[in-house]
Length: 318
Image (cartoon, rainbow, N blue to C red; front, top):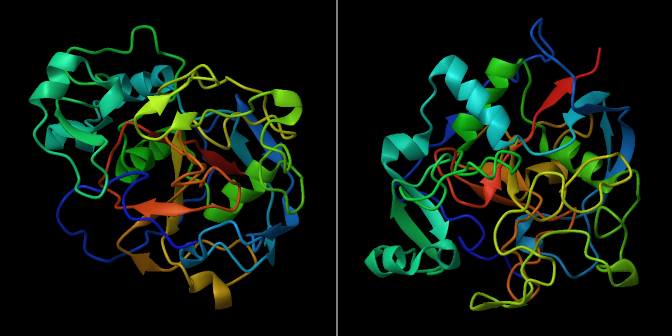
């Protein structure tokens, strides 16, 4: 299967010049709290997939042995409640606020606002460029998060996520750490819970149900993002390592660097124009983007923000 264009998380128009990846911060620091995190022991695991159902051009394979040091990882995506505390203490303005807009999925918009939308990415017209959309106003100026404080924060760029991590004394997970955590100790399985998508007919993640992008049957109960602790956790006690919202990783994107790259605590290419995102989102569907598998990967530019992308933090174990 070949790689799709910007259907998952469209990037901001314009070019992002290739930049060196900053030195990965050592975390934890003196202000790091591991409350709400799980300690994972690391060690060796098999990363990637070559089962024939993935996106070969994305560089999902080959399966290779990777070794990781122990680390702590958030049980959930960073929530609106947590991000609000960060903003109150630092005054941080997200890139969506500074740009004055962000991408919102069309079915989440009120009809009167949808009629006014004039700009959509050609390759993914289900995304709408909505003025005033940002983390606190996720569907534009008339929306709010009062009843969504325990939902994942969205409309945050990689740069915003990095600022939060610095404030919290943590860091973003490397792509290898994210996949190791998502697998929950299972080897060469398709999902964080195994190979069967709906064991005993039960939904284990929030993705698109029905015919994308027009008809969502809502079999899993959600059109957009779900609360950060919805659905069963994996065997490591981590929520939504597949589906719900995409999550930023540390690494610069490459579809080939891993072929000859390091196998011990890999951190990705030294430079790049895009950053890796992992996990899939509520818009993933077998018919066009089955990237909610644990080996699946995609990317976006570090300044981009959408209504289906957030992040979680990690910290080195000491």
